[in-house]
Each structure stands twice: as structure tokens, then as C-alpha cells.
Image (cartoon, rainbow, N blue to C red; front, top):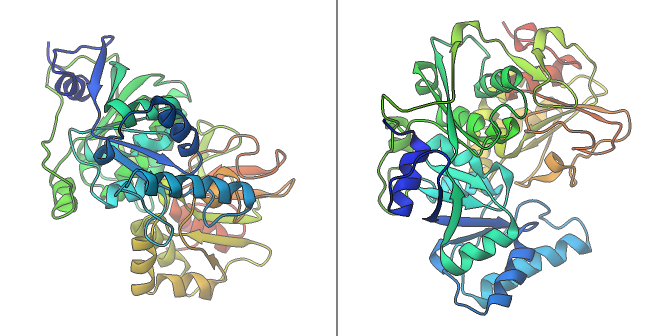
Length: 417
């Protein structure tokens, strides 16, 4: 019997023949923590009184930086102090990094065939480049700091094949929301989602990252796409160290296999309060108070380009505020170079430096009671972006931009031909 990508990577990292259900101790290539999850990991690690596996550790403050209050300043300082104490090279201070998952990809830590863990649930983003990546707890992160290995239960795998040509305004966000709407928020619980097909191979890497990023919203342990020339081109002169693509065998075993016709997909929106509560954008139509473009899900340069193309020469509807948050310093610099920041500002948007900000209800755009936000982020749970009586509607950058112009949630075709 052939093997899935998850089985192959865990077999390689544990030096044994692994099948779904097996529990293994596997070598981790990198472990990442942020300013929220890092402090607890630091305390736990220091209590072990062992050397730090410095080359495997990546520290990225992003959730509450620049600091919003004294408590968040203490968190960030603790990370900074830990990096100095242990001489950690892979520390990305504000002004040099950005949102952790995009930094991990931009800085070449992520590559096909690698096993990467992070103390953040959306670590699964790196599966877009053919890695097995998954979120862990702070205590587990401390274990990897000390030993460089971690135990895993090898997940069963599901296959999602998306073939055909996607229509205009359809993005990776629409593909993953459609899948989540189909299987539910627990439809892939502790399973590996393998997403493939000619529609996927035709997508930009940015759109693939969006898909992998939201695998956790279906409960997945990891979400993996086949590595191809698009990935190789991106990693050229970027990847840290050598890597080899890992592909599933033709006779690999899957617990579920689903087919999607890309030509039938439309721009969609996940309505409150679950990512699975999906409807076509054209059928939503609710008035909005805020439009939010950014996050590890959709804060890349490709996302900003899509939104700017819709907003160029247009104004945000009166009574609506729009916040644009590039994911990293590199994205911000490119957006400035291409004139995208000017387009957003001319339209009436507020443009921020890189931060997780309002995605998790932290700051930089939290919602008041009764307010509605259409957002390119990944979660719309009760109180996710602010007051428990606010509402978050998840959508692609195209839908977010078009809705900001219209003043209500719309299909982008209603704003642009």
C-alpha cells in the first residue's frame, strides 16, 4: 500500500516505516513561537536547565506589537530578553519581520518535506509549500527547544481534488471556505488534508497559503499541497538548506476523497459565527461598518494587488472604515513601491504596519457592540474581533474591497465589470 504525504514525512523524520495511527517521535526542523505563546515556553524551557537548540528556534513577535499596553510590552520584552540570553539568531524584531507565518515562509524556514511546528494554530500554513506543519502548545514548544524532537500520532489523510479553471474574482479563500462549508469545522479533525488538482497548481503560492492556513478551521492536523515549480521558483535563493519534494503515492489510502469543479466555484462569505456558515457573496448583502484586509490568511502582496485593482479610482462608502494591514515589512515595502498604499489611502482606507492586530481582537480595529466587519482573516467566532455582539464575515480580498466600496457585502462583479 502506498503512502500519503503525511505518512512519508513522518516516516522520514522518525527513521521508521509509518502508517496512519502510528505514534512516533520525529525530528523537528523548526519550532516557532510568538509574543503570546513564547513567554510560557521560555519559562518551561528555563526550568529544564539544558542547552537551547538554537538553530531550530524561531522567535517572531507579531500579535500585540507594537505594544498596545503594559501587559503586551512585558510579553514582548520577555521574548527579546530570551533571544539575547540564548543568543538566538532567528529573532525578528518589529521593523524587520511581521506576521509570524508569512515571515516563516519569506525567510526560507519553510520548504517541501520539512516538519515544522509552531505555538500558533495557523502554523498549518506552510503545507502550501509541501511541508508537514502543525500547531502545538507552549509546553510542547519548550520540549522542542530542548530536544529537537516531538511525538506525533500519524494522522489519517483526506484528499480534496479541485480541477478546471476558476472563474473571475474566485480566490484561494473561496476554495477553502467552500470546502469547510462542505465538511464542517470538525470535518477533518486530526486528519491531514491533501489539496490537489490542476486548479490548485494554477493558483499563485499566495492563494495556496490561504488554503493551507485555514485547514485548521476544519479541524485538520495539517493541510498539504503538492510542491511544484511554483514552490521551487519561490524558494530559489530563499530556502535555508536543502530540501526534497514529497508527493503522495498513487495508491495511497485516504479516509475520504472529494472532487470539486473549479468552474462552479463563486466568491463566497462565511457568515457569523462559524467558518462553515458559507453562502455566495452575492446573496449576503448586509451593510457593514468595517472592512479589514490583512492577516496571515490574506495579507500578502498578491492580496493587496487584488484589492487595489478593485479600489483604484473609487472611494470607500461613507460610513464604512477600511483597515489595510500588510503581513510583513517586505509586503509593505512592495506595496509602497507599486503604489498600492496610495490607492488605498486615496480611497479613504487606513494603512497600518505589519501586526496581527484586530484579527484576534487585539487592537488596531476591534469592533464595538452591533458592528459588522467583512474581513480577510480566518475566524469569525463570537467576539473574535471585538465585542461579543459584533459580527465578522470572512471573505477574500476581492470581496472585502468590493464590499468596502459598496458599503455592504457584495460579489466583486457588482462593483467591477
